[in-house]
Length: 235
Image (cartoon, rainbow, N blue to C red; front, side, top):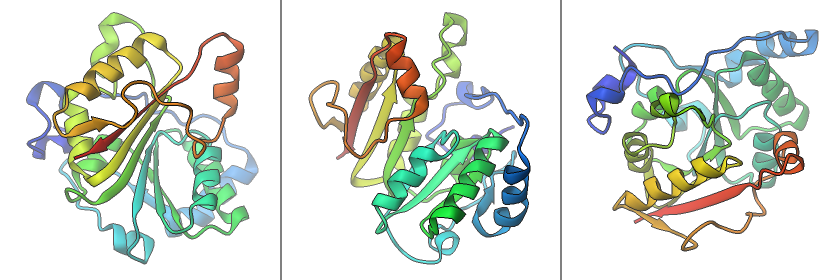
C-alpha cells in the first residue's frame, strides 16, 4: 500500500506504480555538512504508508501563497525563483539526496526563508495537502520514461493530474516543461482532457521568464531537443 491509497482522486490501478527511481549518489563534504545541519530546519520527510497531513503554514512559519515544485534536481532553479519571488513560499520535492543537500546549501548561502525541501514521493506528499491550498505546481523536466512499456510510470497522466489540480486554488497554475517532444504532446492531450483546467495560451506557451534556464535545459537544446512549456489554470 502507498500513501495515495487514501485519496479518492487516485484510482486503484495507479497506486503502486512509482513515477521515479529513488537515488542517493555520492555527496561532497559540503553537501554532507549542509544536509546534516539544515535538514532539521528546512526538511520534510515524506513517509511511505498512510497519508500524513501537511500543515504548510506551520512548515513555513507564515501564511503565504505556496508553489510546489516536483523534481527540483540540484536546486538552482528553485533558489532562483524563490529569490525573485519572496512573497510566495516554495516547497521543493526531490528523491535524489545529493540534489536535496545541494539545495539546502544554496538556501543557506542565499539567506532564503521561503524554501522548504521534501524528500519522498511527490504524489504521497500532495495527497496529504488540503484541497485548494497551492498557488502553483511546477513540473519541470520530469522523467519521460521513453519506452512504451514504462509510460504508466509518467507523472503527467490523468489520475495524477486530477490529484495535482485538486490541490490548486481556483486560478492556480499548473506549469509543465519537457524537452521530450512525444511526452509534450501527451502532456498537452492529458491536460486538455481535464475539465477543471484551462490552457492559458491555447497551446504550447512561450518560454516564461520566471522559469530559469538550467544546465540540463542547455544540454537538451544543444542536442536539438526544443523545450515545450505548458501552463494551465484551474477554473
